[in-house]
Length: 239
Image (cartoon, rainbow, N blue to C red; front, side, top):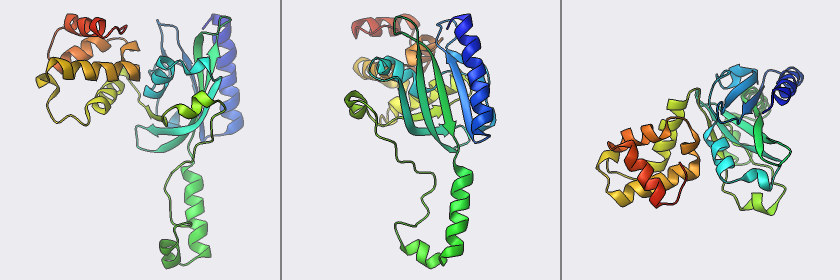
């Protein structure tokens, strides 16, 4: 973002944080390649992140999928803070004059207090055995029903689950674990095709937009960075 955009949106972050209240975390990400990190945040206690924390896995995937070309924002998808708390998350794409993404304005709503109030109220109104036997009133934790997206392209996308990591290494480890969760063989013992398949998954997740991703993946596969670059080239992917 330009300095003027950064200043204006930073004020908006603080304004929204005070207006919406302490259950709403408001975050500004600068997508300048030199940054790709949080540059302003309000109510950071919601996720525990701070200025300098990296983009989330969901944000990276939105950018890889070029969601900004069909939508100005995506609303009400599931977020997960590092403490395991479930959040309702929304992201607005900040675009430059050419329509390219320059930043992200994100809001993460922690509804845990309201769910606790709901459970307390229901326990007063109904006996416990009734709550346990009634599917409609049974405690549902923090499940969230997303609001339908505005465009047909949005409806075609897979449901988004966002992991709000506080640092890049944690985020990369989470993304690598997600890409290899169904593979029983240790990463450093996979054959070439299996490694390429994983690299393709990681690329779709947006991992290679993170600084140090090539070195990280090479370490997981116990190979050289040059090998990872070669796999990306053979797959016709840009690292």
